[in-house]
Structure formats: C-alpha cells, structure tokens
Image (cartoon, rainbow, N blue to C red; front, side):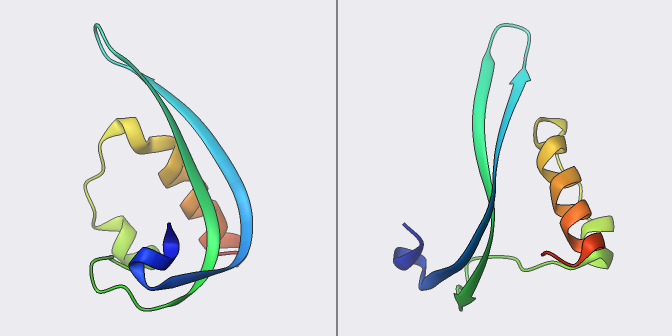
Length: 76
C-alpha cells in the first residue's frame, strides 16, 4: 500500500492494464496513474526531460506512453 511508502493518494486517475509476451511467458500487468503527496526516498520522481534520458524495457512501453501523455497534458 502507498502508506507503507509514506505516500497518500490524492487522486486516482487511471488504471492501466498491459500485456507483454516473451517467447514462452506472457506477463499481465496493471499500472496506476495517480497523484500523491508525501516523500518516498526510494522512488525516482521524473519530469519529461528526465524520462528522455532513461532506458526503459519494451515491456513497460505502454506505461511510458501513458506517463508521457499525462506530463504533456498536465495531469501528471
């Protein structure tokens, strides 16, 4: 739960299901886009410029697209 990380949800904005198929394994994942308050030193808080420098596996491509869209429209 978010409270375990010292965070409190302010606004749950979107549930994002995704699937990635490897050669013999199929991942079914769920991500969430939400606004939070609090401070978690174990997290990396990134803006658009920081995201452009990150190498992210293709399995998480759908999430990166959602993050970029949310940053672009101001909902992140």
